[in-house]
Length: 238
Image (cartoon, rainbow, N blue to C red; front, side, top):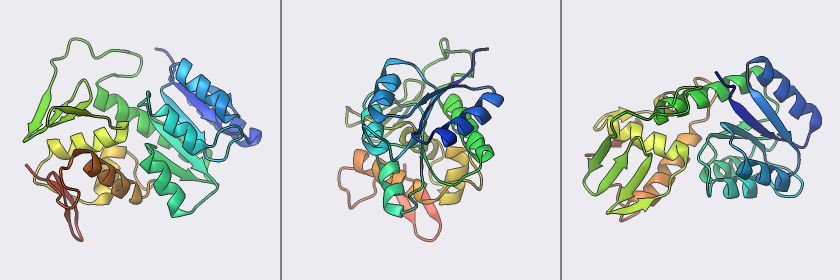
């Protein structure tokens, strides 16, 4: 079984090496890059299973780097930063990060987050670690009014036009669509979709719901698919 490949983009050498050591002990193959522009070239030219991305970088900051990566790559991306402001977290999640971790954090927490995101990504793409393919399974599609979700291809179309979604936006939309007319709290969605318990921030869910709505709704003021149930959570309307 091949090792899962992780790219760490971090200009603090001590932190980068600590993260690398803990991930390697847990069976991951790790590449380090300290410059944003070099990291972009690395991320686009080679295949990685997950990227750990610092915000403050020389050459190109983490937000710009994430934006460029998300133009072609939909693998899990975890952003890390010493900046604790909510606006930075919301910006990172809005650009397509799957998680946002503030420093300092324990290396064991980072390993847990990496494992959780990779496991969730594998389950939703139908690719088990080391198999490399979901070939042979029957394609499945969900159709709700003018919204179509092609599960295996991980494609979303609205009124026949394809909508580009990040990995976690697709995961969240698919989970809600597969469980219609049920109310899920933000905490429950964080656990079920992100697969991490007691590590995440419910703002992550709020940001992702907002991004999905922007992409699939005709009228932003009307929640045609994902409804807010005040004081309780979200519900997918069929």
